[in-house]
Length: 106
Image (cartoon, rainbow, N blue to C red; front, top):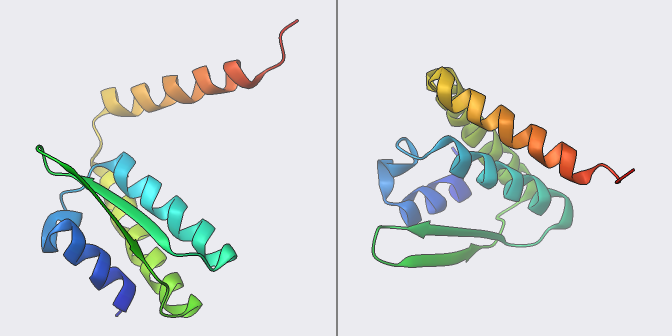
């Protein structure tokens, strides 16, 4: 069990990580990966419909962060399997637009 995962889950409201959107989990996984390399705190934010809350979590250890990343990745995998085709197509379109925007102009 990851102490960091429990702290982040409590910040989001217990079981709400199970209800999190695919993109939110993807950004959290990205933040965890960057923090794993840099050793920096993990910055998380949550909008509850009324206000945006932010909090930083210090890493307990890099091993604990890896366990947390594994749990978030497992949730991300489950969400990906549940995504409707229309949402997957929208994500693919966004990726294509970002690739086109990053190409140098001719």
